[in-house]
Length: 291
Image (cartoon, rainbow, N blue to C red; front, side):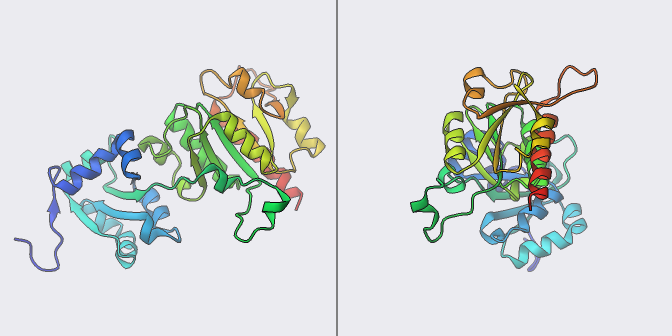
């Protein structure tokens, strides 16, 4: 029997732990609208949201982690988020890393509808009360399959001041554990759109008043030339392709321009995450200069 005031210790067989462990599967995440945020950084960012009381559904931790991150536990409890003790084996089942950090939060999915993030810039709509502000910088992932790359793009987009990241086509699930970890908490800072075709994402960006630039090694325009000419100063959506195949020809053709990153060195190419960071920060610099 558990003493009053002492949390029960859950194991890998406790139903609540079993239910949370099932969220490591994409089908279950989609079905339940929930995902796991692992580690103190992700948990801190989740609890730091204005809607954290409804966003974070439960916090699991080992005794060691709950003591080490007592400030996060206190924040969770102040918000009314249930906090549960788990054994080491129970935590291992919730973690997707070799060395679990001992803290995992069950969170409500964050993604928004495309039209809610990129509403049409129609005069009849723009003056309507409650119309959301259109982000000036957006990343659109087209069939990006690697969760580590996708999470790093989320982090770079956040750092560059982007307002949204769109996971279009056959892109990885943004709530994949590796993607959440690679985002280093940035998943909780941005508007995230999941699903829809690349053509739909491009069409929504253009209708919202953004120019669409496709980052590709064979692009006709040089990124630095566009930056020098001031053509990056306007609201922009960067279209980013699959890490192995790049942008499919039909997808690249949807953009207003195809853009290459100049490489004066000897490397053959940049990987997706690096190219995305260069392009996003080029836009960020132009936007800051244009203020």
